[in-house]
Image (cartoon, rainbow, N blue to C red; front, side):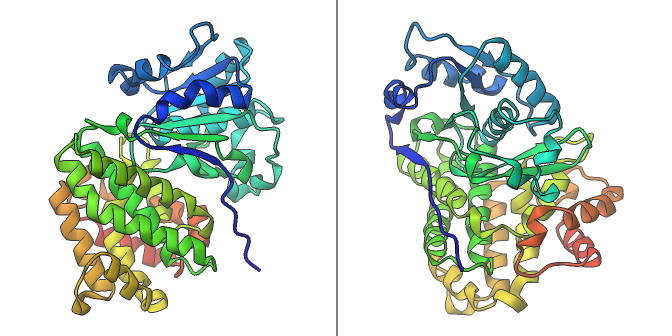
Length: 382
């Protein structure tokens, strides 16, 4: 039996930000906590959102979201939420503020003090109820798709980078205005764009049965493939930005099929202490090796992938798709491998152990052993 659900309200188009006040009225949100980061503030994007809020609305602001959100940051934001008597959250930015907002909305309304108790790998999803504080998600990048997803990735106090996940975590409103992504720096456009690309291709390759999700994933994959390079080269390309915003949203809409070994590796790599590693860039680096690894169990699906990517019949296999992704990475300026991103060799064992314990390991079409994870890491070293 297949459970197929797409359960959130989405306003999508250039100019969608103008609808914010009326949408907040529909939700009955009167005292929001703004969850964002200092980059969004500096870029003037929070100012654009603030212009669309009622002038007399009490606003609390938390702009301390780190690049990889942490349980400690959640506690800081939660303290502001409670002190200001907030009744909902508006998350503005990339995946980090949106994921942090989900953690705050969860802990503001659920018992306990330890977020890890609600992690997917701890069986925490069943503990999350509809009591969640309402969240409005306003993305300023086109990558994670967290604005429509039922999960969030947080570095816990234990040091593990884990997912919280439940349909109740899906924001009540995704307000997606591609205007907010115009001018995003090239390296962030490339990294976030390859995040969206990876979400779509990993979800499509998953063996879970969900034909509607497969169709959405292929559409998102085609859009990301066609437009990520244009968006990276020209930050003002409105058509490219529009389609990348759609590709990111679609990639997250199909998360319910499950991701795979790329994300199982990226999560513990991104959680390594002493490094500042961009999640989408890690996905791009790991993707070619994992595509080759998956061929024995999903080989026929590569024909459809190659078709939407416009590859030749000769390239309609794992090696052809992987080579095409590697070439795209190079054109986008993605680092050539983990070594080029500054990782030390002594991290390999820790990453492999983390991948085995990651929730995405359970949904990958071909589950690697620890030795195979080590091999995938080494193949992605560059």
